Image 1 (spheres, rainbow, N blue to C red):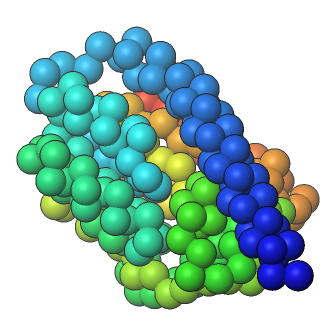
Image 2 (cartoon, rainbow, N blue to C red; image 1 turned 180 degrees about the vertical axis):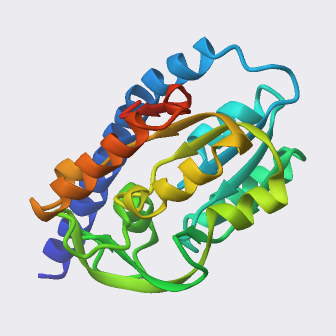
Amino acid sequence: MHSFNNLFVVIIKIFKYFISKNLRLKLKYTFSEPFKSFNQLNLPLNSKIIDIGANQGFITEYFLKKKFRVYSYEPNKIIFNNLKKLKKKYNKLQSFNLAVDKKKGMRNLYLHKNNKSFKDIKDIYLFSGAASFFKDKNNIGKLKFKVKTTTISEIFKYTGKVQLVKIDIEGGEYLIYKDLLRYSNYFDYCFIETHHKKFYKRWNHAHRQMITDINNSTDKHKFNLNYI
């Protein structure tokens, strides 16, 4: 029985290894498209970038390698350790363990449904991209923790004018897009990944309203939606 249990543990570890390897390949493919879009912008030397929903720092590091100054925001305190590591490598990175919301305060951040315990760090990393304020997102589970929030206005007070804002916050875009429109003079481009397809139908109205409001803005040319 003991040898069977050991064999089972080994099989599980092998299974997780291949999932992790496949996820890395998937992430590499997923981010290849936005990298193409970013390259087409021909951003000037010494550009300033805001990465909201930085996750493990794939896009943050892409811009750091170009010697841009990057302000990265990631609320998941476990995943944020990756940004701390990047900070040691790049002196042009400023990272903040914060979520971005329509007001300052505290929020619940719900993790992926496959995350069952904070002790399983590998799984936290494996499914980190799913974390959301909203527990009715279709891939969200019960595991959660409290995160501190800041606002678009507070960010721009700190950064000043930037060349690009990238946003990937699993539904949170519907909470902050009006602030982005209000402060659109603070950036040249804004790339937003939208997530309405990962929510139930009640979110369709919020998505349509965001699209309408952006299209009616005089700065609509600055926005790129669904870049991934």
